[in-house]
Image (cartoon, rainbow, N blue to C red; front, side, top):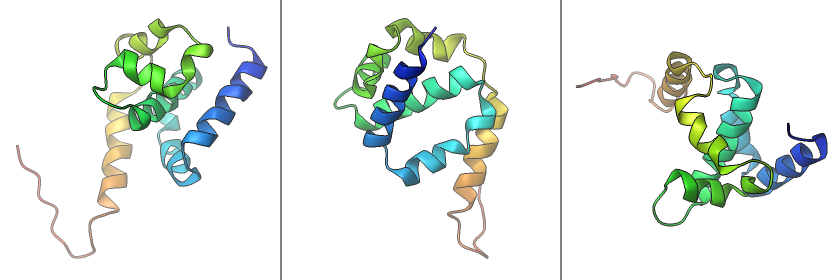
Length: 111
């Protein structure tokens, strides 16, 4: 179990490496995850953004700064065992993407 002071330290770190506009964008994904999975998701995204070179799970975990608070296996388990709704995630992503399409512009989907 992660202690409250550790959670605050991680939040402070993520506040430092992710701008407020990006954190508010990620907040739209919160309903797609359980609370622990959402926190791991934010750490993974932060690590992915700040990772240099190949973005392996280990490299992303290191770049996130989250290894002080959780074991590396938490990052690996996120993709295979964490509880999150893939359809809901896709819906949020699509909604965010559509907002960038200018009004009156056709939306084309291809295979």
